[in-house]
Image (cartoon, rainbow, N blue to C red; front, top):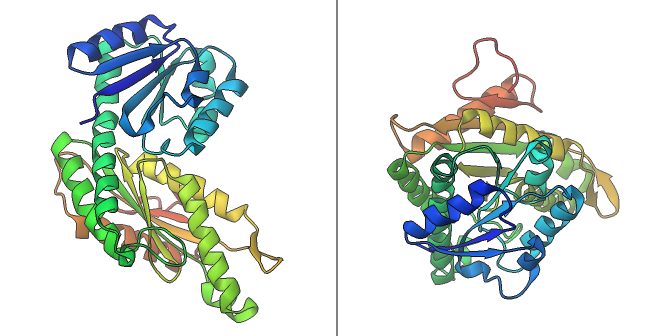
Length: 312
């Protein structure tokens, strides 16, 4: 596992103690005084196992640095964990949208912070394994030619690895299956080339909505699957709702004609201590998707269904 951790601007005492704890556990810990160093070439993302940031109050500047860091080649897959006071917690959603994976309060003890951070550091190793596997599997049959996302075959291979990792470290795993509502009408109204363009742009929305260490794949046609590591049912439902809004608010470009679509989302989860099965997870998400279609489409549904029958 990559044992290199960078702590940027460790102003909060918990970050300094965290650095000491990580060092005692065999991590190579480096500290820097500015978030701006994240954009310098000497921050080797490929070797970085985790990044801890001390929030210092300049939210707009910090968000811009996070966005630029994520856009850098190699910035994907590095867990970014932000520690701050009330200012950071109040802006947690903005920080996550900019590129932070988790936002922690600064009044946690170092042991509590490390306990919550350890699973995501473990997922970094899993992510690197998948990257290496992708490099070895250069066969284009693993990539969907229309969207550039993993295809069904690639997803099936990744799913087995991710389920085993989640089971082994005792963390939840969730799956979202989604497709475009009444997609046949898009093809009929605008033609297959526009339909292909809408599918490609829909995939791009999902790719933006996911976290860096999640997996989004195209299963075929207008159907996509999203695997969320270390996310329970509630977190997955909120992620699906966020992506749902992004799709609803998007106007896809269809040969200079704006095309608006909606989508239905099915969510299922596996929890530590329960029965773990790849087929069960995806099938349950697919069942939830089917219920969403039956109840009027353009909704998020969870498996098992809620007693009140309300939308997620």
